[in-house]
Image (cartoon, rainbow, N blue to C red; front, side, top):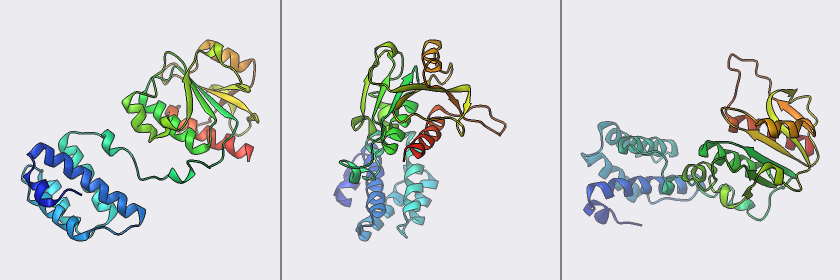
Length: 254
């Protein structure tokens, strides 16, 4: 670990970035349940409180974090990122190995996903993270959709991009899909829908929904499923809707 003396000798910009990384490292250790170097952490927090380039709320937050609580450090880190004008960075996005234990295990279902013109890299990454969590077999992405290799997709996937089978594929070239159905407005309510034992769900564009060609294929095969919304808003984020659908589908299979 970088010594506090060495940290203090770094240029301001470098020291700010390194400090955020160090706080993140302490969070990870605490979340894992392991012991931390409390002397080092208290020295680090003291340095943050003394560094005048940090705004007042960050320096006050450092002073208030000496009890080493995970949430206190998490709040402090987000205040620091806000002060830096940064969002989650690549070196900051990975959570501790929450799914490393199932690298060679975990259930896998004959569930496949086709992303039909999903434009948001964030949504693509979110779908992939959810797919990995629920044991999806593979994902296809239409050529006009956002690539999982996009930095925002990688960030929101939390490592799922490298652990799922996926490829960019036109709809009419799909093989081994099983029953094909679509998640779209105007279909059968999800509580009444008969999920296939093996199949592919089509998830459409955030703005335009499932394309006419893909919708026709679904209607000629497994049908269309919808999520009834009793509240004032008539739609859900694509990734959120997908998570609800996967939970229902997996529950029907187990």
